[in-house]
Image (cartoon, rainbow, N blue to C red; front, side, top):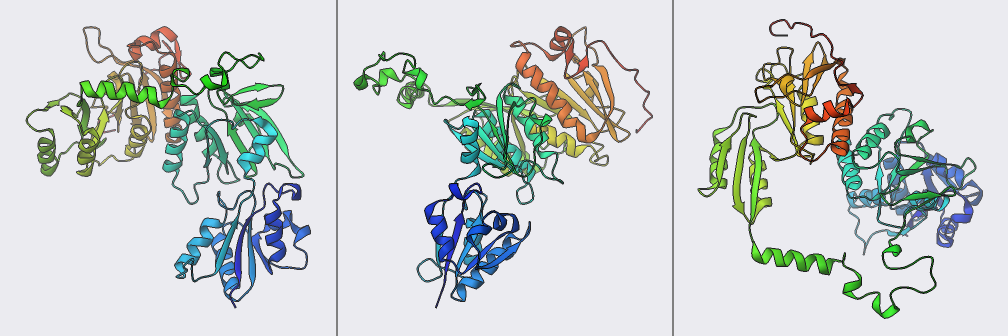
Length: 502
């Protein structure tokens, strides 16, 4: 006789918010398998049952044991708080089954029972913050690489999603929420509403309304869910509310609406809809079916040597109709007309080349780090480029990065100059590379700890992006604002002479 596996999401923790089917599945089960904390939350309804509970990081052993018990003919409930299919046990149970050769038609019967997830239970306590498009992102990098998580935060922030952050902080993971805040502030106002909900619908429930700029001033832990509003979210009488968009068509304070029911879904009442956008795009495409592709192509941030195969492929891809222009910034500028821009970029990347936008964007000009011999600073240059490379800005922002105190690639003359020296970074702001009045940047900081570099540069770039005038060079911006990223214009440090080869 073969048993059955229930994968149960029991909601936030209180019995009142558990579904009828979740309770039935637990009652039908011979064995309850779960994380100790979750078992304790429902101890009153599992009395008399066999309970297998383990601690953190034991998820795989729990799933394996549950499968083993079901194969012995027992009905087994694998429990998760919230929803079992959202950072819960459902996916892992299926993975373990598949590893054992399981097939749906012939193997153990599996029933996944949904529950109220934290994004929904916390939203209910806050008001109505997820009335519009929303997403969930876990900040735990125990299983997911941090660069993937950071990319997702950036994409969600740029797209104006309401964001629910799960697993924001623990005793060991303290910097992830700090990094998340930094990324969010690149795209959103510091005054954007944020809700912090700890232990929703449990005995120690705690709810705080704050904003992105101040959210780290409050207690945040593993039991906290962080809900970040979008550009339209507002707070009223202690409630966090994200409008759905009804105000575009309706008068919310009037009993008589400007549009009659039969008029509300007409195309002319929705000029923002896809049908309008698509018709405009198709009209434009009919006139011009090719686009002008302009990109910067190089062998890498630190690498300055081209492989012969890369040169051959570059020439082949660009062809006789395109142009390849060498620039003093250690990259080739490729210009060509094409209707397959994505394929062109993909082909260049496949041969190991770095491809970046040109124009009013973030541009990284790094040295060769003495052909890679002075490699300590390379990861920081690559991290800066990965995070900001190609970012749209008021004007081209040139960031020079040198791997030693000789600064032989002239980083100190760029808009932002970064020089690695004695295990730390010196920072120059407001350089000017061309013209009769060309000048180096001001030395505004020495000895910046490597762990603080990216955050320091991010702060400067965020202010320039938000407050810079269109077409305003960074050195002009620095002079106009007088203080950028916490560094004051005109307050320079004495430059310590560098020893040869430092």
